[in-house]
Length: 290
Image (cartoon, rainbow, N blue to C red; front, side, top):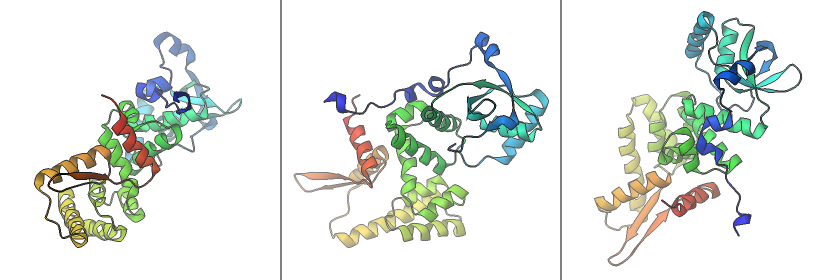
């Protein structure tokens, strides 16, 4: 049976240095070469789409003064051209600084591994916005069959953070765009996830922008909308504070809505999932051993 189970990549748990061979002192000087910037091309599948212009300018000024201190990593495309594996910020800043060449290390790494490296490099440095981060996590899970736990170890963030960030992708498309543009925060987005109706999500998101609502205020409004919906479904007594607290904690662990209902002698726990990937993540978390 075990032979039929797909093996997940364990390299992620070892972090970025496991994917890009570390440059050590003696070998380093021999491996680093100067490459013309005109022969270098960014990776079109780089997860980060936006680069902070102010930070790029600051880095370019530093490069003008002291040069590029850490070589970028390139993959050969043909005799003269190369694709960036790691170091696109340094590449862009060098162009801004008017440089003609950049120090680089050439590594002939498979394309699949390059995608992994690009995702993890950005995630470790926190250079992605929340939606890019969510897409990066989802890309690692969908394309490389890794678990949220493995991603957590690789990028140094908690598993609930990974799960809740991915959940932002279940928001209404226009709300996702508002997070990506910075009109509302990821915290607002997480509060809006409590509202199942996509149009009501958008209405409240627009209200956040117009009235400058805090995340806490949005949580309270979303809670009321959700409770009103539940009240229409059932005339049962309101849940006690202990059950509500447990539901909230389980929701944070699984990254999805959890409902606990009970009678005098028995009860049930319902865990909502939106697609097969989420179901697999929940099962994986429940099956993991300490």
